[in-house]
Image (spheres, rainbow, N blue to C red):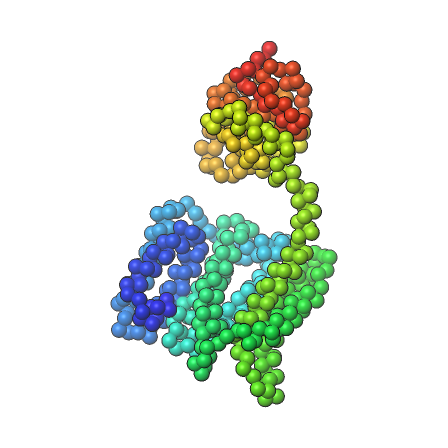
Length: 441
């Protein structure tokens, strides 16, 4: 858009089409926001450049047709969004799940002010002060506004997809603001640099972070306690207000200064971002380490599993298929359908009759295809064969092309296979049963 505004690009519609097709393939929300930015940009140009109105209309129509056509071609008409205001907000702050009505509107407003206020002010400044690129700033500003509106559409009552509509224009806006305002030229044509202001910005950013920390984190789920936690998202706004206050004091005291509002704001945001990341990481590492100690065996292979994998490498072919009960949760295997356990399938380099059931069920086709499939049969046979095999189950496994059955003794302790000739591998945690040797009475 910058090159088009400066008449430095021929046939911009062709390049825009390629970029928009890529955006549709990556994330439709990104393409929708980019389309709004282009249309907003073209509307301003339409009134500013009368001699180019025909080409502006062509570029606009091509952009719209490209996004709609690419979306229909890649995704069809199956997807649908409905009006669900602020459904993404609980994904940003978990204790907002129970907020509804005016309380949810208030929390959403606070979060949006924290995310968008500085960007909004900077875009307005660029639109009114940079005459050469006013149409570009207007287009990006329209995408920010549209992103906020589109964020209220989603598939479910609580859905993170709306957040993409907020984040997408922020990426475009920051690219424009940083290059054209923060790192552009000042009113005298001099290059702006953030380095002279970085020490001052560090102090301002640090003060803003401290003010955020001072906000009490009450051990309560009350509305006031939740809103206090939400207000911490206003940290960038606090920094911006501190900068304005500083510049105002310097002005009334006639203190000589070379400080730029926008470059100082950029440096402060960098300090806040880095500081927040370091502090949050410092708090999270001990917590995550405790979680790892507790849940690590679910995600890290044991010596027995490694030995089992080596046995399969040495005693089976890459075409072999195995079945197992490893995905059971607990000895009763009461929640196999919802199990996410997939470590055995990840470590053993052979095809599995059924990997993680939750993933298999979630990413299988819906409707009649799922109802008519043998997914449930595979699940039931994989669970029961470990402790109570039947001749019918043996035939089903062979019909599915299964060669081996792995008994996970940790989830299904059993002595059934203790004296069986079909047992070809034995360890403290796993047994391997050769289905071709299974003989049932």
